[in-house]
Length: 630
Image 1 (cartoon, rainbow, N blue to C red):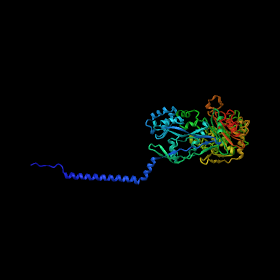
Image 2: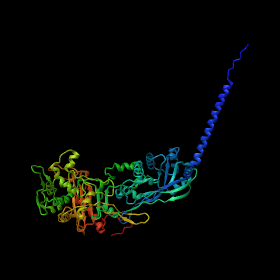
Image 3: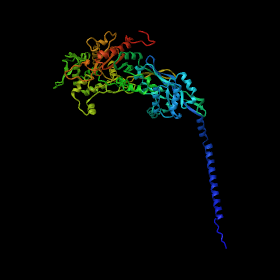
């Protein structure tokens, strides 16, 4: 009999199948419930949120950059202005083949090699979603050609942009500064200051000069246009608008024509000049030669031009008026004389017999006077008038370096003046403590001797000398120098004067100050070191010449400029104020490798005084269009 073996248990398989079916059904039910719940959450609970998201996809906020404020001189002559022009820009993220796009653009409009190099440099510094300018200041014809071929140029746009123009050119470069494209460092600082939102839509920011110092006022406030857009992101219509607020205008103390006169007076010399109003601290002129054209930086300077500026031996990018540090030379003598009188070390009638040199006790080394054979019998007035080195050698030794340091510091020497420009150098006013800290060496008596005539470690800027001289002119007030006189609101057009900041008021004996002033007036009269520069002036000048050594001269040798190269000739300095009886202008001049202050620097100051006090221009200076002859 055959036995049939059952291979499958049908009941068990059926039960297992039914279990799986129930599990699958339960899973489907749970999934459906989850989908229904998610749908409820998205469509009901999150309804307002997604309506807003959908609306934001349809509506975009387009930032509108504000017009940058103008910069004007004291007579409201425009120095920095804005103008609108079309720019060809390219966004890397929206371009499939960058090189092919550049080649295609090149067949439509001319793109120079310099523009291409600048574009590649800016591209390397930018994010891929940023629009980078390829060609600026397009003509109407070029705009039309690009618009007609837009469909062939993905990622390429023509935009209207505001540009900055500096009418004064190189002469004002170190005063006005320039704007440039916002880079990563600028963005980091804007975020730190909480100002990034206000720079949406802006591509430029102040980099140097007043453009940097007054960026917060000049920039204005960004506006926004609420635009309805289509599927491709193009604007269809404007829904609402928050208008941008223009930046504020700046009016300077500076006189553009006086600045031009001062710059012209330098001729081919390099150097710096600062002219101040001693009663307000207003900067009437600030010259640093050579300068540079700030317009080169507005749209991005090409690498070759930047290299030529940065590597030039004449250092045009250095603001010599604020950052150029030089030994003050004999321009320090009026301040030394006042220190001697105020500290009771000298009386007005005290005299010395000058043999033409000075020696320390128990030393055979001779510190020579500039005049061979000496000046004979001189008092403190005559020592200033004739610039007697021997007198001030002895005074410096009697005073000592530390008392000298402490008194001269009261005249803004050795520290920043507080001018409303960044980058000012504090100079250097030496002392025993400074040398020990800086060099770990003791101070020697011979270093005190030469410090008495502004040589050695002492370094100062033309701005510091002008500020110190203003204190002699105004009776001891240290007024912080200021370029900006007033700020104009964009809507009311009302000028708001900026406050005059008095840093300190020195308590100076009027009789002692009068002695120093008399010595400075004597320097401008026959027998004085700058008499030739004052000859024929219809006003009285009080001044002091100075010469700062560039190379040392051996003991017993005489200085002979004709045997030196140009770069080793002494620097020429001059400080002065006028009219001496009631000063309204102070001038400090430093001419690099100019030789003697009386023959090189003083005539420059005379040209500035003549124009400011009488309106007289140098005879060989061309009048600008619109100027009338005096």
